[in-house]
Image 1 (cartoon, rainbow, N blue to C red):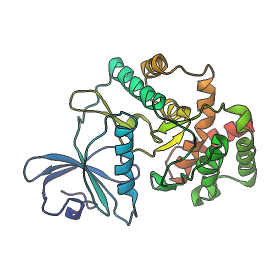
Image 2 (cartoon, rainbow, N blue to C red):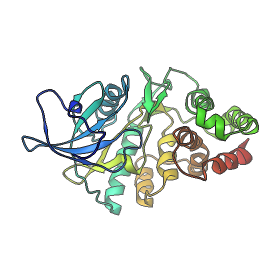
Image 3 (cartoon, rainbow, N blue to C red):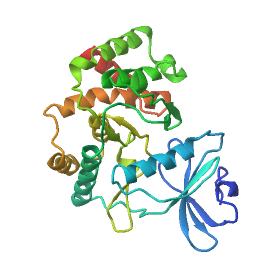
Image 4 (spheres, rainbow, N blue to C red):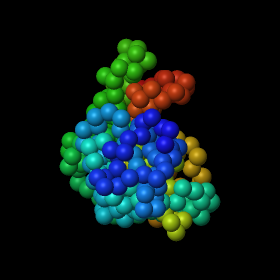
Length: 286
C-alpha cells in the first residue's frame, strides 16, 4: 500500500484492506483494486479533496443506466463523502469484434428505449472534475450550445489557451448548430462514453462505467466513442443494426466532439493537438 493517495477512510466503516493496487485510467480521480481482509475484491474510486456530491451523483447515474437504459453497470457497494466502492468486474477486456458488437447493440438499445421530450436531467452532475449543468430545456441546440460547449469558455485553462478570435468563432459555431446538426430528439445518454469506460462483466459481456448522464442526442455518445479512438468498426455496425444511423453521423460526430475537446483542454489533458483541433472546427463550421 505504497500509494500515498490511498486512505483506509475510503472504505466503509468496519472494512479493511489486505492489499491495494492502482488501476489504469482514473483521469479525474484515482482508482484502486482493493482486496479486503475477508478476501473479497472491490474497486474503490476516491478523491483526495472535497468532492461535494460527486460520488453520490455517480451512483445515481449508474443506477439510471441500468434501470432506464438496460445497461450492465457495476453494483454500488458503498458511497462515502470522498469515495465510491464498486463490485470488481473483469479486469481484462475481451477486445474482440464480438465483444464490441455486443457493446454497440447495448448502446443502441439504451438510446432507442429512452426517448424524452426535453433535454437535461433532474439534477446537475459531473463530467470528470467539472460540474455539468443539466437544467431542462426543450431546445436541444440551445442546450448543447450553452450547457455542453459555451460553459467551458470561462474555465481558466481554456481562457489561457484560446484567444478572443477563437472564442468568437466558437460562439458563431454554436449559433449555427441548428443548420449543422439535426435535432434527433432527446434520449438517455451515458455522457462520457469512450473506450476506458467500457469494461466486461464476469461473463465477458459489456459493462459501462463513469457516467455523466442526461437526456441528449444519441450522437453525442457516438461522437465520443468515435473521436476518442480505439473503438473498432463492429461497434458502430452493430449499433446501426439496432438503431439506424444518420447518413452524415460521422460528420456530426466531428463537430459534436467540440464539447470533449473543450473539456479536455479545461482539465489540462496533455494532448498537444487540442487547440489546433478546436481551431480546425471553427474554420470548417463557423
